[in-house]
Image 1: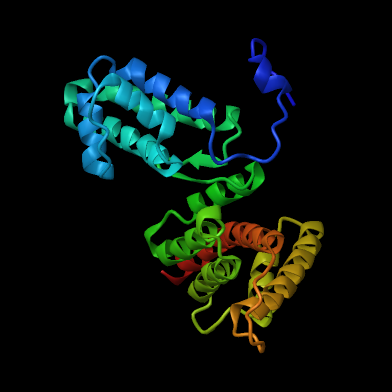
Image 2: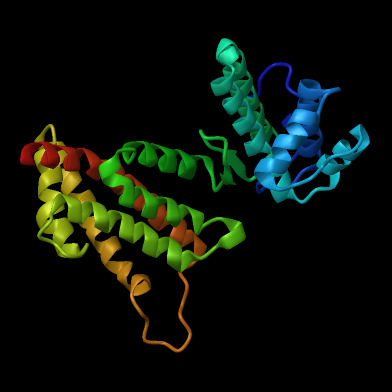
Length: 287
């Protein structure tokens, strides 16, 4: 672990272990930041929080502090999003102070992002200020880079299915079979956009159509051979996922293991990121 000079002792030597869902330190740090930002006038924050989240924390300064100490963690995480939303709205409404509130929103975002990491909490704050569960750094990087590639109107259905695959891995609503199915659906929608004559994602589609297009984009013969092997493996994995995607011939349906679901969703994310540039080429060629 790379340690910054001047880091707190507890963050260097405390055993981190698996990311946690709650933390007294996180609660107090969140309260401390907002206390500095709003004290002694909490009224605007309280009113906005009541309106946007339906949570009433009116009362004395001590009552507000008690909320941050004792509220359910989901309400506290709502607070993260609501404050970011409040600052972004202020930036839009107060034209003369646009830069000021934009900086405030950015500062809040960075503080929460850093605090999640430093307190080893299993959450991540997204660009729009929403909070979601966090699997691990590599999984999150893969998710974010794939979402960026899908950020075009024509691929909205792919993006929706892809995001659903990740939501189904969240601890609060975990459904591994639904996650695998949604990931499969995301890749299938993209494949059908690329190859309109095909009605489904199959091993043959990958080997006979997707792989040749990927090979054609290879810069040299060495890369072409490596790409061919990658897509052969992808075809086998996608073919194996049909066992979870379709009905099973058993009385009690069998869910995929979590490790398999995480691997499959990660693999599909990488495949989608590879397929989008090929889709763009095909789209331009058809115009």
